[in-house]
Length: 251
Image (cartoon, rainbow, N blue to C red; front, side, top):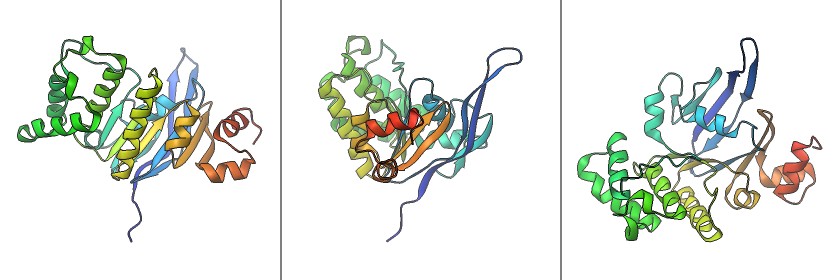
């Protein structure tokens, strides 16, 4: 049986931001991570740890200062267009066009992601079925609830059926039921063989979804590996204890 291929790999991925004429901030420092097909890699860390910056570099939204990432065989620095065609990116900011309906939104994003016109209607119908969106498909985005908007944002990221999904805080601001719905969908995407990278600050979500965990603090990886292996190494019994031990320098 063929082992799952590595779909995302970062190689000394680094990002510095200019904070003044002479001062720079090291937001991300030489990150080395891997994620395979059918695997969920969770990136955890407090605010300012570098999670979103990491995801934005992998998604080609930000250019690395040094190092790189290889996504579906394409280097983010050399082949950004090919990387974008391989990924679906769910950002913390929904950025929806409020005057457009979900049908119009998904049609637009299907086109800019290169989906053939003859396939767009059937793909939208498929995504509506996956995410249970048919009841509000023709309602303007400014009339949607928060949960509906999150579903639309998720639909927008998967409309072109990419092999790699990158989710930044996918359950942020959602009620318990909608949050469960979103995590259930992520499980289904994993079962379909997609590679998923997500950042979250909700430990129960990470425990439920992730095959591997990377704990970031001050732009650096402080712990990395499968959850059982990390807990065994640290002597902790749950992810929350592990997280605080790592962040507080106790492991």
